[in-house]
Image (cartoon, rainbow, N blue to C red; front, side, top):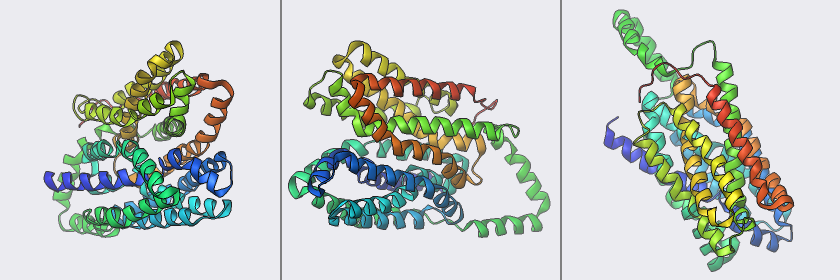
Length: 410
């Protein structure tokens, strides 16, 4: 596929991912309070429904990954736009906790098959080992999901109420999301690809052997065959820790900054820096760090949140912007690492299914993050950030325990 075609695919998929994240993962931060007030439930109940959606997404992730491995990402992602629209419509029509939880369960199905893991698998299915740059590209665009989503959700809630905001996001999935994902390139089903390779091997065994020999260096970035289970466990732990922290901050960052001594207005303004910080860090990864092994960039990123947390705890409110930028920068690069590290360590074969399985612990950790971190924040205030700081140090240790291959080809 030509470079311009790949850039167009990245632009479409990145924009569609921005819509998907803004209307699901970042939705409760702005709408949970009015939603709870109108439905007559406590605000933690709304976050509990969100947690149920994350658990559902964990269960669906491996199935979606296998489907993308077999058929490509276009049909799966178009289907998830319809699911997102249905879930948001159900949410807008909910009259009590039963309808609320039912809508969030459906949202979990959409999230499990329509967020980054599915997008990464789609790119690997299209571009194989050359997908690292494309993965970075879509995260550059979707890094603005919170920056766009939070203000837009707030504006729609002021204009039309929280129900109107949900209807608005549903309409955007139908009018914008479906066409964007529908324009993604087609891929041949995996069975047809296997048949074509088998036919080519039968017709030209000598050429096929030469091709296999010439392709051998591309596995240089793979994990040694004796260590795949160890690498999988370590990566699964890193992903679980980073997704716990990312979700805890997405749900409670303004409150955490307020607890550290900033005003509400300043806390909201500082929290909005997460999106730009993510994008700047991803530009750095795309530029200066592009020829560095993804494991090294992940190690640097894993250290960012703990360093920022220590500065926030020592300095307090005046360091809110520093903490937010460091957290956003680290999270931005670690999001890319979730896509690139499995590709570099294991290769493109079966990427979607493997990615789905490795993300199950991360989705479960993500599901409990809003409730657990919220309870800790209520109990100890800004000191709650010690939890995510220590988890970040543990993730850094796990990344150091991984053994990179001798060579890496960008």
